[in-house]
Amino acid sequence: MNFGFRGYHPLVNILFFISTVVFGMFFKHPVYLLISFSASTIYYLKLSGKRGRKTFFGFLLPMLLFVIIINSFFNHYGVTTLFVLPSGNNFTFEAVVSGVTTGLAVVSVIQWFFCYNEVVTEDKFMHVFGRILPKGALVVSMILRFVPLYRKRYKEITEARKGIKPENNSGNFISRIKETCKNIGILVSWSFENAIETADSMKARGYGLKGRTYYSRFRWTPSDAAAAIIMLSADALIIVGAAEGTTYCIYNPYVIINSPSDFGTTFIINELNLTLNPFTALGIATYAAYLLLCFLPLILDLKEDIRWHRLQSKI
Image (spheres, rainbow, N blue to C red):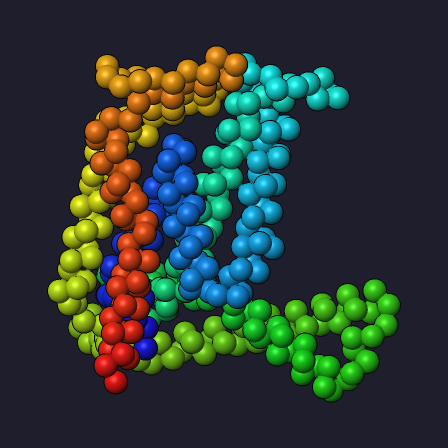
């Protein structure tokens, strides 16, 4: 049984990931990006454990560094030249900052999708969209499970063929390529057969027919309503803040963070052509709302962990 955020209603789970992914893709402000990156990293590592640590340090962190390096060395816009490359192109401060923000955005969104795969199972997805778009929900659900399913089946095929002919994995490079192609051919045939069986099974059950009843183990509770109200309120405040310019920042031809303000202190670093305007009250409230939104699953999980430990201590 799932506890914490994973135990909430599927609609709450899906609304959360829609919000974080959409905001993560469109916001380029460093405060938003740092919040999203921190929350997605902590939550992904919490959900996946040791496997997640391997993925983060072996794939996601190198990807972040790769995006920063590629953007810094191959984009030459900006007016602040840090040094000149051997090719004669300028290595600029603006390109480095833009690379950092782009890398944070890309990695954060990928991590939110990883968390989505851990939290939103097929039955949750079908519960939310099955009645609205039954055929479309079924197709999307099948597509989302293709990669892990095919990886598992390919491993089964490989192990089975090794048991039949242990020499299949030996030989030169060409022989191994031929064996891989045979395994892929078996996998494709198996997948086609499974797709036909699934279609026949769903048709026999009357899936998508008008008036068909549905069973669901998910029930809407006051806790779900409270979580949904918190998320929708945070979304509304973030959208209002974004419309009022709290997400304003530019990285070309120079770096300016936040809109100009009539009050507060503006920090200007002329050597880097960096202007940091003061945070407004609405901006701070918007950042707080985004912080609450991104860390909401962790807060709910922490609440459940504390409750669980208290119950254990009473035994």
